[in-house]
Image (cartoon, rainbow, N blue to C red):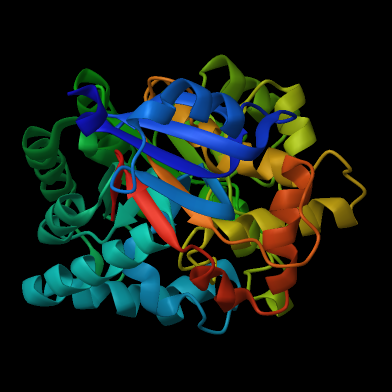
Length: 431
């Protein structure tokens, strides 16, 4: 009976463990039972242990293709798929010119439903099996996204009740009532999502945060992406009662209850040591979006480079995100490439592909509280993985070489990353 439940996969297996370590099985063997990983072994040992149970129906040999865990994209806007490759101005101009008009279309229920169906199919084809996602302000768009997302995602409606276009603005009461409804409907899949301090009043952030904390929901927003954004935020808040003396963007989120171990701050590029200390003490995570923050000539918004060394020194948790549509491509391979390229140009030799893989998989799963069930290929975890053929004549000898062999050839042809993956498995089933 056991053999009927068992499935076996053969290939070159990469299993990320942390920033420096990734198991590398040049000839690896994965045994899966009931959608979970039963064993990860060198091929020889796997065949010796399971040989009598193997047959053509339950065994897939991927040859030299890489088998690695599915990705966690910890910061992206599914409703911005259409603006990914739009010309990038400054952040605030880009929002006004392209992003807000695109998000207005999601007012139409049929449109939102059809787009959710398309987008989340595309996302799983890119090997992304978990993460944190921003929707538009509309309730039905969140419902559609949560219904269509496959894997471990938290998704929330952006909250906008000041300094926003008329078609995208809510009153404070509307925003809070909607938050209550979405938590009741979706529980921990809902993520409390003030777009950023510029668009959200203190009352909504305070009361919404309390609701989210009580329901053990995640909270997400944007923090310190550009100097002009920081300046604008402080100019608004210093005129608000109770905030006249605020010294930093982080302090605003601290005062409104937005920080905590289930809080995700997108970008966090321009942070002072004091702000990093507050983020560390509150166990708040920062999500680094290298493709979105990259120079404009690289299709980014030119916001600057996140200093991961400073962030790690301050003991702040962090992971990687694509920030679609500030980021131009959905593939986390492109995000990994951008992370390595940009940081190595600055002389950061420890910005390796192994580190990028960990920060695109297990680090995100751990932040979302899913590290015990997902994020890598350790025994007992969900069998959610991707299969990637390796180009080139030289067979890689290490995880770093293997990742470089699949990522580097497409650095000048980045849209090709979406064609890299030959198969995606979720809980042992091919999707």
